[in-house]
Length: 178
Image (cartoon, rainbow, N blue to C red; front, side, top):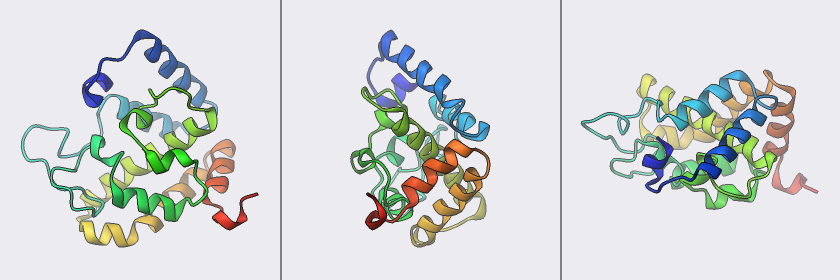
């Protein structure tokens, strides 16, 4: 599935690395985040781009036609801006995010980056579903997006001590970094 979504074949070595990353995540994030990571790898999130037929514009407000799909979310300028506002101390990889990073098949990802990406996957998956279910307009999602991200991260922080520490770190104001 991942190979089809990123448009290039994935080697057995990369698959082994992905499996290892997912196994190691188990002790760092709540079960719901693990479920979100698996859903992403299987392209199982409910987006209009997942199914045949109409593919709607991006739900996050960037106005990309046919942007309601994971391949777009990785590079969505609106989502990137919301994440930067909500998580000003996130790893620099988020400034140059790609679908390969989202699917954790990019080489040289530290365990800290893998945890941050897993949290991003969960937040984006749940937010995109919530936006659709609640009928939130893309413009409203863009205005409220950073607070929606913070709310989901607060929910995740109470479910895991390791995730909580990472969330505190990425949520800290940039000026508070040492």
